[in-house]
Amino acid sequence: MGCSEWDDYLKQVTDCVVFRYDRAEIRAELLAHLEDHAQCLLEKGLSEEAAAKEALLAMGDAKEVGEALNKEHNPLLGWIYRISRWALGLLIVLNLPTVLAAALMILMTAGQVLMGYDEPRTEEYGAVVWEIHPQVKGKSYQTHFTVDYVRRYEDGTIQVGYRSWNDLFPPSQGWSFSLGYEMEDGERVFGGGSRSAGLISYGEDRLREPVVEDVLYVVYYEGATKHRISITLPEEDGIWLAPNWIGEEEAP
Image (cartoon, rainbow, N blue to C red; front, side):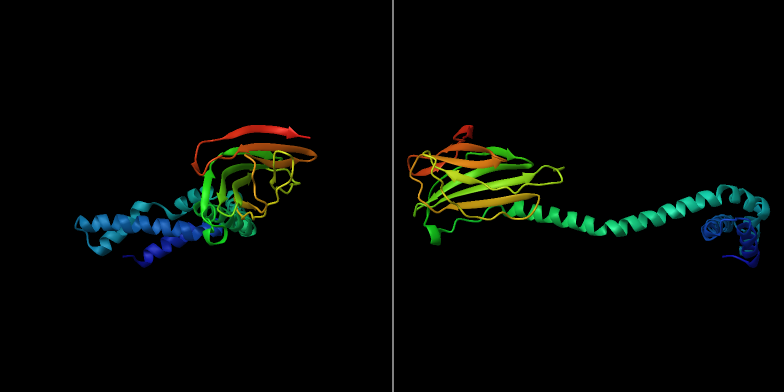
């Protein structure tokens, strides 16, 4: 529905609006009002031509409507709005790599949490003789860690599984993080493992020398300060799930 009078009326109104970038939006809104009003009149029994003219008359004088709309669509506010939209779009484009990197990091972390630790390689070390879950915790600078399990295999290999994560707002200069292991006499027991990427990293160290004592010390450093956390190992074969750690002490 519509007529040439509608087109003329809408042009007169929009010509009064100085900020031309809003004219198309204003025209579309006024046209929708005209069509809705004319449809109501058609349902009341008016002819299409009569409904179109009656709806146009109800809109009011084109110049008065245009001047009123021009006051609402101030050019200064209009430009501020458009520039803000352009700036926001530019900001989104410039930060898109950062957003994608953060999203990828979250996905990687979720994947690592779901996967957790590797399954025991029984064909390489033999079956699991015993496993304990000490849940000991520590912090080195901005890195937190939790020792989740200690596991012994048939060939004497000791496997230590731990998680680590950093503070949300770490200092600009970070420090590398690693765990070491010692026996009660201070002899170092060497391990080897890997830490996976993500907000939460999972590490698994397999101690190559057989551990025969009943206490294993987890060692970490803060600068020159050495810390040790002692974990009591089972004396008998079997699965021991209860927390069983003695505590943390500062080593010389």
